[in-house]
Length: 189
Ligand code: NI
Image (cartoon, rainbow, N blue to C red; front, side):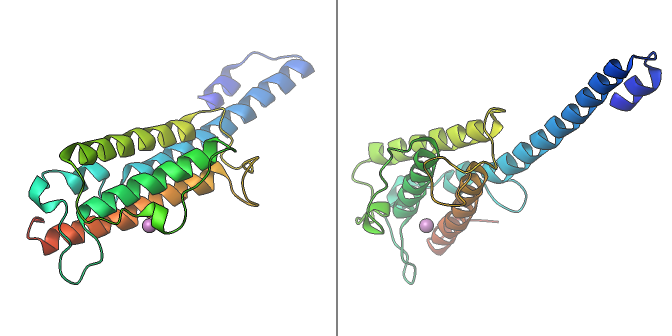
């Protein structure tokens, strides 16, 4: 588009040329910036080789949510809650300098294998979806500088780092969730 415009433009004054070049360069930068945001959101969604959250929990019977298969450390409920808590913690850390993380590791894992109520499962699932949406919105927002140090964060921490951390962590534990379902005879592919 820019090349066509450049070739077809009428001769400009030196200042006009400078302005045109500035617009050309800034458009290229914006395009690369959008590409980076799209790539990050792609992995947050669970694109490519990774399955997404909805697929991982789809159709999981209520009766299997709290069962820890022999030889595996966690139930589906514990994994879903762990996914929710960690994603929420990273999101809040990214947004709010006053955020206080849970105690590690106990604050990141429910001690009971089974959800206390069916409603607790539904609330955890809804919160995970909502926080993932918020993280993707943060990444998409043109006013978010993905590479700037987080003002209240640890040295070297950026929104890009935190978003990739969420994507990586989600992918790992969603894979575990599939292993749990497979061990319970509840996964076919
Ligand atoms: Ni983890």
